[in-house]
Length: 96
Image (cartoon, rainbow, N blue to C red; front, side):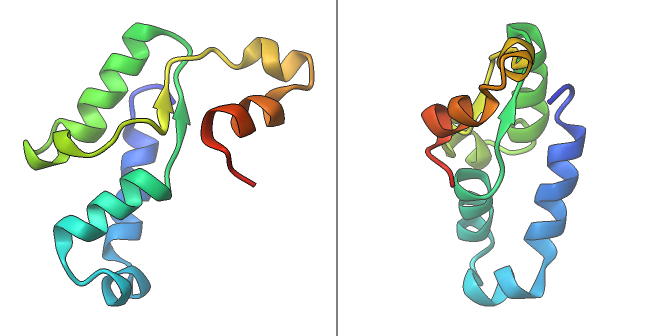
């Protein structure tokens, strides 16, 4: 992630989706679910990480209480070059 703009657009679309509205009618619960379970990001440096986190979570004080564990400041280039990106994703996020 760079600025957080792309991830924020994904968050907005998920937030407005009929399926998630039905599953999470409460706006705050829906936003929390999206940020804690549906979007993930790697930032190549701490400064870019800080910018992206401020953009993604800085819009509202309540959003700042949502876990940010799915957003990390790790430059993935070396992992990609070594073919180890999947391992990093598993290690950091435990995904599929």
